[in-house]
Length: 183
Picture 1 (cartoon, rainbow, N blue to C red):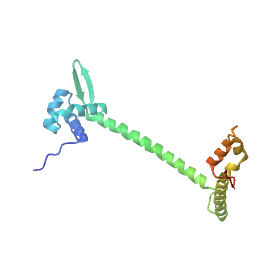
Picture 2: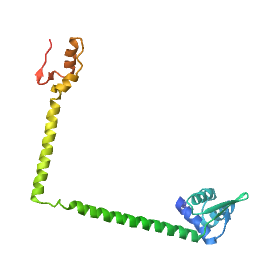
Picture 3: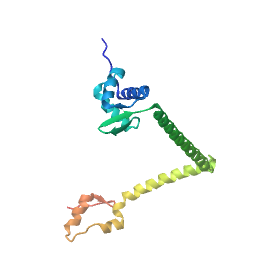
Picture 4: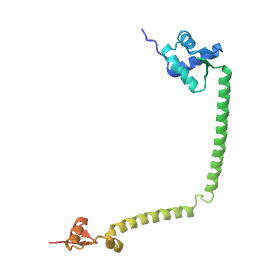
């Protein structure tokens, strides 16, 4: 009692293309809607959607003659499309290979003068130590930033005598290493 599994969209597209390739004929939509369910197991409700997706992808050709739309696809067209795609991919591959080769040469060129020597190792260690020292000094400078004369000069000192006291309390009870107490 197993249920019959339906076809997915790609399987339906492949079977629809088989109709065109096997018959090598030109069809109207109503003809395909009759043939597809009988021969390929494609539900008639999805035929129009599948056919439109094949037309959109350029796999099936269509033309309007009078009031009717005709659809066709020949194996030679698919073969030519695959050949064009293959040529395009081969061209991209060759271009990528050249780019890779160029980058490898560039890497080799940049490695010259960077050989691991004792002198280079010592210089790299010294560089790392200097960078660490720089970070420590930056932190220390930031710690005393409030005492910087330029920063102090930019502080708003209003006309009212009590406002500086309020501003100082708001900033920190300890400014420039001195404890301020207002009683």
